[in-house]
Image: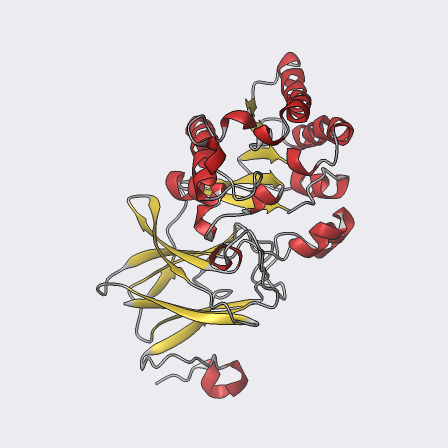
Length: 359
């Protein structure tokens, strides 16, 4: 029998507390695992959403949060009867208004008929210090296409997937649309405060419509700086969703950056659809939020006046809809799961409509 690398170099052996005889761990950075929503995930020293220089040039908040793995996914196909994860998490997000299952947990989905369906959460223990192990058993052994969502508010340096030793491992299910949707915005965009990673609105949309995505949401730190706008302009994406109303510190800042950012994106991507979204927690300060919404709408209407037909506007006031809208946040600002589902329904409807035209 051919020797494994851990037999040759014991330092590479992945230890585990699980008593499973046929358990074999695999680094998700290796083939045939498919990683999504991350910057150079196979070569960087930890999982990141941006290059180091871009993060540091943007602002102090982004320089920390770019290592939070919001929107990251690993996809693979296997016939193992179970999936075990062993995650190394040097930076654990512990927030008063967000459960640890969302800030530091991993979600497991299975691809069924082109849609990713939730099956379970690898639940993090409250007392973990630098990572954890968890397992999920299926009801039988057969071929399945798996997606694992990474934590929304934690930094992950290593993720190992444990499968049966004789299990087949293949590439994951392909997304229906090749180019990812790019989201830029605030803590809401990053996923605060979903109860688990799969419930932030971008992951809901991705699972339902089969579209890859990149989450560049940065809690308190999305302010439309040139450094990150220039970086985003160089990415290859299908749709750009501009959702950073929250983090513009005042109306004047929004005026100075919003259309400027759009024009940079448009110059680099003349034909890419752009969706402008205003903040969903409109009721918290209706007078100011109406003025902020007008700034965003003006960027949209100016584009239309120039003959741009690849722009769309979503009024944040209608994202939580009418009935029980006061039950859609945890603190009057950040959406809970109900809020994210409603956001996904409205924004997802627009994204689905655009993507169908692009095929």
